[in-house]
Length: 359
Image (cartoon, rainbow, N blue to C red; front, side, top):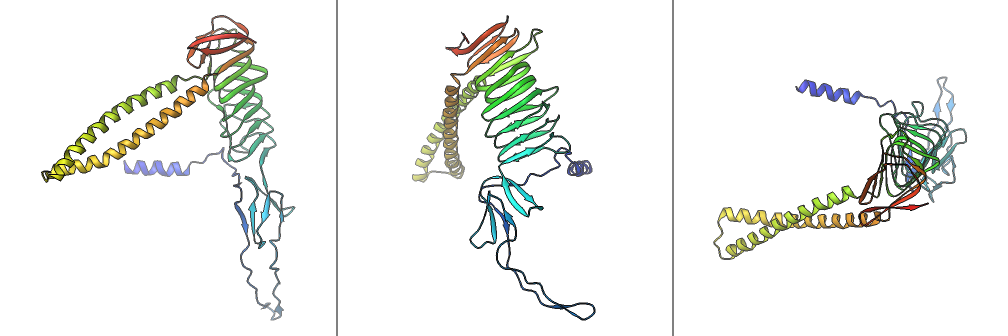
């Protein structure tokens, strides 16, 4: 059994991710990029024929390279720092060191480019993102081609996809802010807001937004399974109920511990506490503060969830042309499955009931 585990560990270590072939050198703002050490003067030497080989004089001033606009040198001139966060670029033909806040892929994200992960600025891909590849950035992500079965994520910005999004097996489009897509087929898209621009077609898949989903056409005449979640708070409500139950149980336990501590401390002051009771008192004194901390954390999470639920109350779905039959719509606390095509209709939830309004 140990041999099998060791073999598995070795094979895992030898596994190569063929989609992660390129490292993006990332710098934070004011990060040290380059440091020149002290220059130690050399000495004259001799060649094999006995002639003197004179030492080369090396200048003590400057770093000897050109600095781009997003870098700066220290007062001593021996260190170079990043003026802003971004991609570290070295151009040997220009002897230039710089920081680029935008990472541009001129072609496709495929085996020739590899995954793009962890970039702190904006990423622009001028081609397609091929199946199973990833583009993950802190800033905005713009894909000018098609995305198929790939992961596209902005952890603190928008995602814009000018081509189609097609999922056959898996894949995810996720934006911290707004996800802009033109055509989504069986796609899995998440964002604060989701805007399906021209032609604005959604067929199949799952769209999940906190505040707004806007599209021209959702679903299809053939009834392809399409699920729309806007401001859906079902999971939050369930979590809130679970936290309430946990808080109730922890409060009861804390009350019991407090009574035990009070009783045993009375025995302690009257010198009637035996060794078992002393151990119990010690444990109760340790457990009570920990339980108080857990209750405070639970209360803070409850407040945060209630705040999140309140922020989703104005959520709405806007269909600028046609919402087809058999589309499942979850909107705040309401849910409906469309039975017939609806035109130029907006949806919002009031008092747990789905309301429609004309666009």
